[in-house]
Amino acid sequence: MTTVLVLNGPNLSRLGSREPDVYGSQDLEALRAVLTSDAGKEATIELRQTDDEGQMIGWMHEAVDSGTPVILNPAAFTHYSYGLRDAAALVTKAGIPLIEVHISNPHARETFRHTSVISGIATGVIAGFGFDSYRLALRAIIGLN
Ligand code: DQA
Image (tube, rainbow, N blue to C red; front, side, top):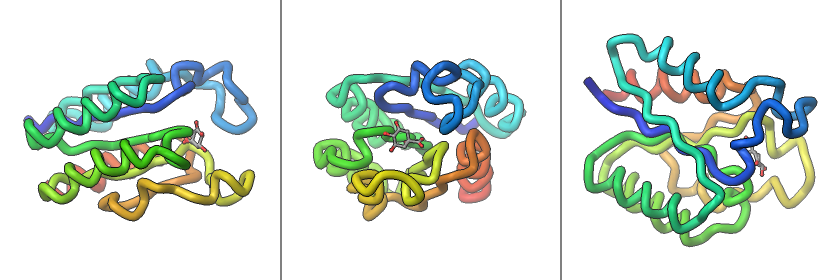
């Protein structure tokens, strides 16, 4: 069975209580449950969260070495982390899908959120659909396999 890494960046551990008007009232465990249910027998969901840029970069290296597709919500790293961009580029340059997702639509928010340093190297980008952004990305990844 294919494993899919679902990697979440800084402050996403606070989902459920963090700005519920923007991010909804469900937490990461609820996200894990819905993705695991959607994946059924087609994929194993490995969902992780970190506030640490170095750890996230290490997970990109792990995806390259294991050939594992990635659903990535880079959170605030989206807007400034060239280190994460370079690491994520290793994934897609190896021919492994990496889909950038956002719960909110960053383009409808503050100006600093309009720039993503990740999108240019991602396989695709899905934003603005709440947790359904991840579910759509999972469908895309399963379809790409
Ligand atoms: C986010 C959008 C980012 O701008 C923000 O820094 C986040 C979450 C989203 O999922 O909508 O932490 O990636």
